[in-house]
Length: 529
Image (cartoon, rainbow, N blue to C red; front, side, top):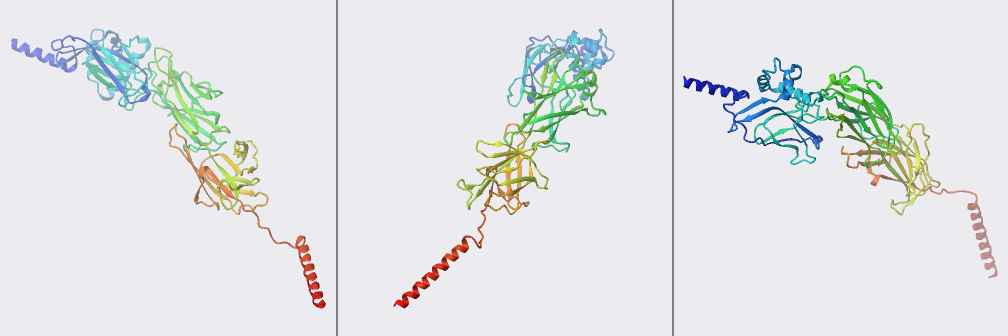
């Protein structure tokens, strides 16, 4: 009989160990709960963020570390007793510990991921009065490519680890980390994701992303984000903020849409618009009653579309004209605090080149420069481009930029130093035509073909490079490179043609008289001889 009872107790102990239930026969009181939990991520968005660890179950571990027993904490009992919150049914105050143990131990795959979301949201909901337990921060700098947060001196237990504000699923569909701290050192990955924004730019409504434009072009910008899960919040701040460069003039917000929703959102009802003003030039599109209106659309994309025009203050070449967008979002269910996403930047470039008008056989610094030559620059297809004179630069170059709508164009004329600068062009092929040559010089027999090819590497830290190539017959083979973006244009002086009358007749008359005089003198000399 004694032998049978020993076998029964042994079997019961084994079952309790497998399911993580209280098993006092195999688990001893922990000698010292002084565990360290390190959570980490390679995502720089989490640098400096707060991380909370909520103890759902306490744990005791056997002396040899092979068996763990979990006991539900009192503050988490309401979570499991509420079937809508936890997904567990049939739990009462008398049986909640055993049912919670059994329920969680059997969760796998998508069910476990869904449970983590529910637990994280419930823990962070202010009304539930759940203490964070332990709070720490993610490191500002990465070590071996990872940003880490360390919880030291933890009691053994089963924890929900969440970053307030990380209310978007990560690539694995997870919002929070569930981790058993049952040994001295435990590591885990940070789960969930923070709100982000993706910014793109097009010329007009072409549907094609661009990085170059000419002054006066209307650009269409799109800001795309994902609607977060706002379950833990009473209200939720969600604002698009976009800072325009001084080279862009804001037009209007044309739409705010949610993917899969037929009707666009309505200004004044669903969102408000604060237009850019100096000095920060920031556009704000602020969502109204966002949780109440959009919680049902959590996980769907939301897109803001607006227009702006490249203006006369646009930087030419170089670093370009930078636009930077962010999302301002609620990041703590227990307060009205907000965070701001990593900026998404686009750069719009506009380019230019210089014409250097000279005469002589050799093009160098000593060559004679010509004033008074007149030019036009058109697109290769023949469509005209109007230019206005900005000013003569410090080097006395004549600087012309592409005219904006409503501006009257100026005649492009070379100054005393022969140099004309064209600014505000997008990539493409152009026709440079000399319409009037300087006095005393022949006009170019044919137009010059010019190709503008600006490139940038897609980052927001480097300058663009632009290649200007050209030919002398307006063809499609641009076989000459413009050094430093300068195209030398030579004029030859006109040839003096023969004339009759005037000084020519007088000269012949004088010569004739001299010949006759010499003949008479020679005849008289012979007679006297």
